[in-house]
Image 1: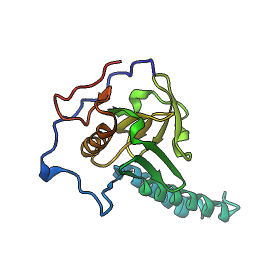
Image 2 (image 1 turned 90 degrees about the horizontal axis):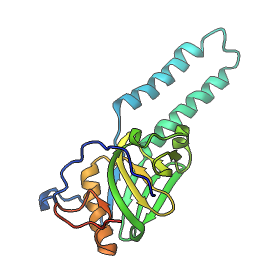
Image 3 (image 1 turned 45 degrees about the horizontal axis):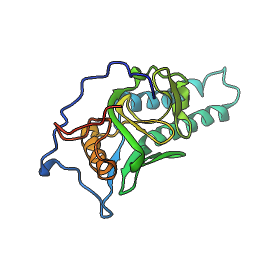
Length: 203
């Protein structure tokens, strides 16, 4: 990308996990992970629905109750979309997906796996995160996609745009992604999922 990222949050240990802690795979050998859910975020959605129904709908200022129901339906849809966010690593691709939105990166195109908080990227166009691919812009890495449920997660550099995600077990997810990517391309320039002491390529 040509520009250095700002200071990141403290990185977790990167040692290879013992066999007992390795992520479970499904019958097809895929590693599946859901997004990191926030109680606060869910509570905000719930409060919005309750306020619309019990405060705005009966209010004399509301001359069109169907508009309130439309807002309630939109809020419920966004909550369902939030819960639908999940990630899949198969033999060839990393896929981030949710209702009406997904992004796929071939493993052989992944160049960096980093721990990062979304605020470190100083993103603009924040409402873009509700779009199909969550397209946003950062002064540090230019355009990137964000399919996430929590502002702390992983930045995956690969394909035409980097991808910010927030899997529930980000350390385990990073290890599994690193293992599969390294089977294609060897050491990466930055790889928080690699075993401790593993080499990286310097650009």
